[in-house]
Every structure is written in C-alpha cells, then in structure tokens.
Figure: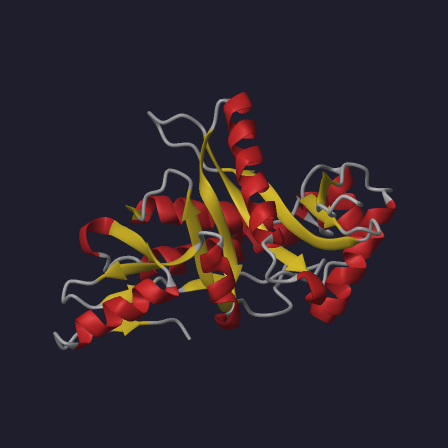
Length: 277
C-alpha cells in the first residue's frame, strides 16, 4: 500500500533555482502586471532580501508559497533590538486551497523568525502586512487582525494606513503613482491584542523605509533619492497624525468577527466603528 502524500516544504536559497521561475509564474497568473518582475524576484533572493518558502505537491510542482522579509526596527533606548516579519503575501493554487497549506507556511515562518531573532539577540514583535477588503478572512485565520483605536467619545476607528508609492522617477525622485489606502494587518508574537500607538508608528516606519524605500544608487542623483525619502517622511507623518486621537495613546487588534460584535455593542450606545474604505 502506497504511503499517503505529504506536502514537502522548502526555502528557496539559490536565485538560479528553477523554482524561482515557477514562483514568478504563479505570481504573474494571480496578480498580472502587479507581480514583481522575474529579475527582481531573483535579485531579492540573491541579496537575501526576500524569503520565498514553498510547498510542493506529489509531482514536485509548487502548490503554495509565501513571500516575506525580516526587518529590523528603529532602536529605542532601554530596549533590546527589535524586529518584524513583513508578510507580502501567501499564495496557494486553486486546487489546493482550504487545506491548511498557507497556515502551515505561516507557522513555519513565525518559528523561523523567532529563531533568527534569538540568534541575533533581537525581540521579534510580530508579523505585519497589508490587505485588501476581500482578504481579511484569510488573514484572520492565520492570526493577523486589523488595527483600531478608541477616540475620546467612545467611537472606534480603524487606523488609516496608506501604502506609499512603489515607483519613482529615476531622475527626479517624484512618485509616478499616488499611494493607496490598505488595511494594516498585525499579529503580535507575544499574544497581546494591543500596543502603544508609538510602537505602531515604528512598525509603519519600518515598512515604509525598508519595504518601499530604495538605495541612493538606484537613482540618477542623490537629490532624486532624497526626494523619495521626503515622500516617505510625508506618508509617515500622515500616519502618525491619524493616531493623535487614540485614547491613552493605545491601539488594539480586532478580527472581522470581533469587529462585528463590537459594532453591535456600540450601536446600542449610539456609537460606531469607523472603517477605512
């Protein structure tokens, strides 16, 4: 009797691994023009920037993979070095969805980040990412929730998070597109459901400058690169200002189910939960 098939997991370490093209083809099929170009997928692996973890099926083909980064946060006096896992996305092919593969990738990634943090003497705060309106249920299943704050009148607001531009003019540093509002998703590795608003700003800063920022050599002049940094500073200031009304300077996490329950409770009191649209 043949043994039942078990998913095989692997991290792509070599940028010339044939699986790199396979990952890129899955991204291209799912995201179209929004998928990273193949050269960047290869280069990000070569430089150790992005981590691609894959699960293969019985025929050795990739059926699920994740794209993530391990990011160091801005230091705070009196604290050990801190870091984050930025999860860009997890993608599973249509045939193998709802079988727990993405959950397993997320679990292994979290354990790996904790081990890396231990080896480097860091305290890894958690996993962060951005989501659309339709993917909330999926992210909730693997522990990530949207971020909210209570105002002075007892209303609850989702923290408005705007993802910065991805592309800038090489010569001027001006953004080629405007940023777009996304839902910031967070999973705190210590199991807590709330954090200081200042720590959330540090998380956003890490994402903005590490994930969306570029190096000076990527632009025609230092002035052009400096302009991109000014744009990112502007987005970060806007994010920080949006938290000015947070009661006691704290924010908290809610899943879709938790939010719906809170909405019903507040409605009875004449209050509301305000979502980012």
